[in-house]
Image (cartoon, rainbow, N blue to C red; front, side):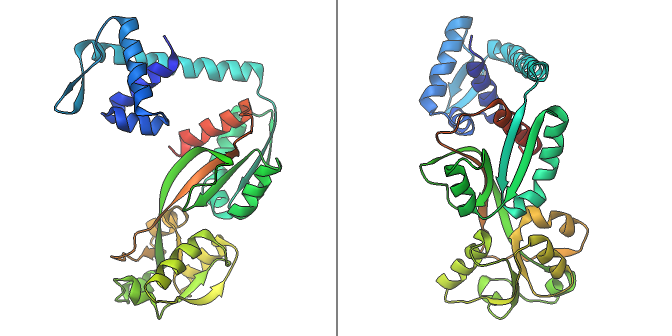
Length: 293
């Protein structure tokens, strides 16, 4: 009985669908179907029944789910203990966008270092294009990016999560404005990241398509400074929600709800397609998924 078949079974139970489970696991749906068929042959029971295009657990399937969940939990515990006993060592060279470094890396690196203290970590920040070049020349083991489009064929995506972006402003600025649509932003000043920034490009390209041109009041290559200036009342900013969540929650910033513009981009962990996935890379990826599922 293969662990991956059990994982697929549990994922189907969680998603309620073979197709959604296949997408979340990165498999073709036919592969997931074949895995379940093998499980049913090995167990000698039917695990699912399909009624009106929906999937339901059989009585035997419900009983097996308890065992399957326990098997996967024990497998994770065994893997972690053996890795710690064997002592994952070596180094891990991580590249990331500055915004990703601010929002995600501190928690991930802290948890990773506690679990794998013998792995030496180094972090480099840069733009998406620079990070991909460094993956190509093996200066980095992995890169954590934030882009609209998927990378080219030369890279493998190990993790992908959609993240919304919003126009934000200070509390008074937002409450005193009548901005409802994208066109209402044409006369407003923006605090922008440097030219080439992916989310700056996302806004400017969308505005140009509608014949608009945003006004750049400031250009700053540091998102933390942009946030602080925005709190001081200097113009609007267009930033990923993960960078402004804490300020919005504390009432320092407010998001504009623009009816014709609800963009998303994707945080991704990439490696070069020819890169060997070392135990350290696997451990980092698992830690990132646990903290930011």
